[in-house]
Image (tube, rainbow over all chains, first blue to last red; front, side, top):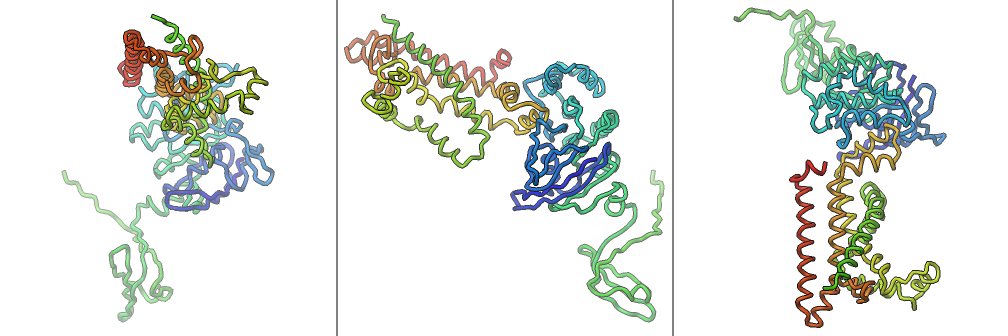
Length: 291
Length: 223
């Protein structure tokens, strides 16, 4: 169980943003932080890893306190059992792939874990290569393997797939899920890609302007809004006009006006200025063969 | 032909460069990563020798180290150090005078590295010292080379500071640049020319090596 409560004033070029997030994560789950850039997602990951100090709050990982402002506890990144995959991968250019993994070992530890990770991530042929000779997808696999050498309790992924093309992305999503399950990790990923989130995560936390705005099962959160198959728009009522038994309601959706017919019982609860949803439920698209 | 001034020059340059390397790595690291408010002041002090006339640096060092002065007296009594008109004094003056040539390349090399390299090493449980020696320094080899070579070459070419604080004592403070001046003074142009030519060729070769290595022409030998 991971308990987290963080407060910090973040400084962005656009100004000051107070970040205030509280959430709990069950052990072994895959959680995604979703939201616009500059919402504070990466800052949350950096505070978890100990790379950025919060002003107030607590981070308790499976019963161990990593940070607690009112007891003055703040473990250094070195002492936190976290794995971090950076957006730019942060592979050490002076070391080859195997040396990058070996660097993560503590003194006297066996190299068995390295051999296992090289096998799981299919890095066997790349062991002697320097990072600047690798493709983006290969670098990502090395970074992922390196983050797991110390068998972390928490794996943090900062937009790990954003710089890769779709084909490689799909494959790497599988790798990440595979190690997540095999090492029984608790994983927190930052991502913008909704299909990726739905595919990979058990839970999604949407952050906007430093606050959590939505939290829950990803398919539920996103199907209600962005990836719906239905026609659904939100707009504002501009005018209502009674004609015999029906009402004609003018609604502004984006820049467009639409007129919609409503009966008396529907119109009763509406008034000018209301925000409304215009949706078509029983909509049946026509499919015709064209060649 | 007296080789002593040349040998003394190289001895001075080697000692100065080695000491500078030891001093400059922590100093550059601090300058590259600190958020302290006094950073501009320290940066200014480090860079001062770039624009101050060497005679000014030499003059103040001479005043400070003079045994008739409290500080110079204290140095002599406690450490047995005589920094005026001595080789130790030349080393000390050269350290100050060549400091920016070592610090600037290392500092800009460190600032140019992605901050995530350092952070990744910390998250992997590695200490600051381990990170400096195994991650940061190996990835700024060209900057280290530039710093070493510039500090070395600059120490060889030093004149004003040496003349002020070291004087012209054969075997102790009479380096090549002073020897050239000395020979010209006594109208001994032939000897002056020999010293000058050696320094000229040397400076050319040193700089050429830096440009060849850092310009990737010799990268495969270096990496």
